[in-house]
Image 1 (cartoon, rainbow, N blue to C red):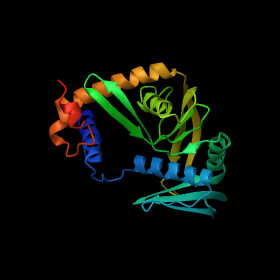
Image 2 (image 1 turned 120 degrees about the vertical axis):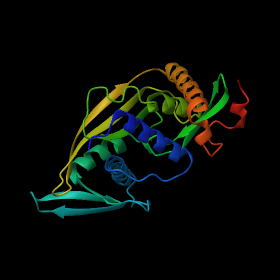
Image 3 (image 1 turned 135 degrees about the vertical axis):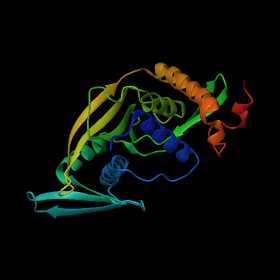
Length: 239
């Protein structure tokens, strides 16, 4: 049955709280698709086997509905088959750009509540200042990811930590995926969203987003958080 807007929002909030508290959420098909696709791309770029215990990858050939080489990915109860030629095409774009893959990055940012630490794992970036986030979706629309925080947070962290010399462009590399229920084959078309905000705008927006999140956290979910990783004691002392 269709999910109401209120239930959808509550579900996303519950997932966020569980993630912060270190509680494993039950995988859904959309999340598993993104995880499996990212893992397949990363393994091709790095020319290595997957080290994830929750994802299984295998290259094989299928005959139905037509002969095709695929990369089979399984996570939990979800199975996907990505056409190998198109998957290699995306990986080659990133590999030819000399991208660093899933590298941990962190940086401090001054807020009205005190100093906060931002951290994460950008999907791909290179020293020339290009940052790329790989997305999968079943229904793409123009500028779908325009308001996603990665656009500002990752360039800010990368630049402050000295991992990029300059910041030029943030790209959401989007694979619009359609998975056949009969044979699990996931065909996809690739789109790009490019943003050139400038590093100062990234820092200003990162600060605004962080302050808004801390304010919301203090008012709405503080009592449900069981870890000091989010908004530790030094932030609680302000205001």
